[in-house]
Length: 380
Ligand SMILES: [Zn+2]
Image (tube, rainbow, N blue to C red; front, side):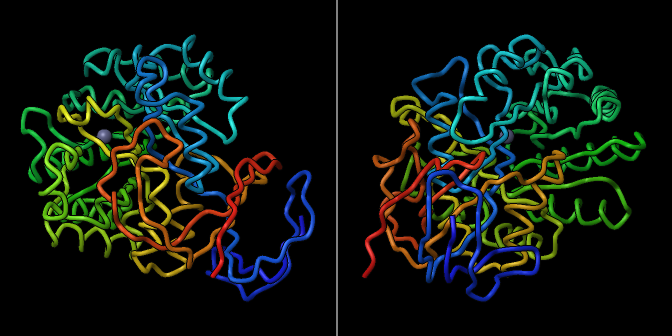
């Protein structure tokens, strides 16, 4: 497909309008004046709820939703039912993922059943296709187990991703700081290991990661669009619909995340897409739909274009060792729309952004050289 007059997002920022040929079957010339072409975004942190919770999401509904959100590659967490802690079910998931509209990679559990005690077989899970290990949703490993997990992941050639909260301390800011500190200590003791901190939400967490990076520790970190955009005050009125873990924090914490993202202390933006059925959400389940609001929320942060590329395209792939492969998104940066969970392709309609007027929308997504999503835009 020839795209004319399109600006391209790359490592050095946004290009001037130019003509680009992309590999996408069945399409021809297209005037893309005013639009931005970017390699598809990679989401390091998604809950696709499959197997086990089809009322919340499936591989198919999640992948379709991701395509509409501008993600051509998402990484699914292991806290499904059963937990992805053995090679055979992982291989079954990998086989099903081949037919999805976008690329889905899988994280396997660090410990059996996410219980924090017995390590999974990292090498076998790696051979079955896992891109990383994480007990996300839980964090029950003691220091010794954490060190052994880092060593096992490193030997298998994978990063260890952690949901940094000491469970017995709850989910307050001090719990995140304690978990990050403990994990960095463990990392120091295991040469060659790579540690990735999921959904960092506090200034204290950011400061510890910054110090670790200054000491050349191999630590990376992600922040979610909702922690970058919102604070506790924004969801007070939402009651159970405002519940998420880590919770939304103070203005100071949010500002620390934004600064850290600009600096590169926070490497990546990851959604922590956590769909729930309406009953579960009303009953207080933690988590927000992430895929279909991410682009508009992130674009509203006013990031430098180079930071946007680094956080949404480049660093997520580097962290899990993946490359860009004929996957593109076409963005209309000026399109305004009102967030309505009912319109999501995802089965999870639970969004803290409901009713907000936002700017920035995906016009087209291609993956594996196919157009997998195209939206007819109303231009003023
Ligand atoms: Zn988590």
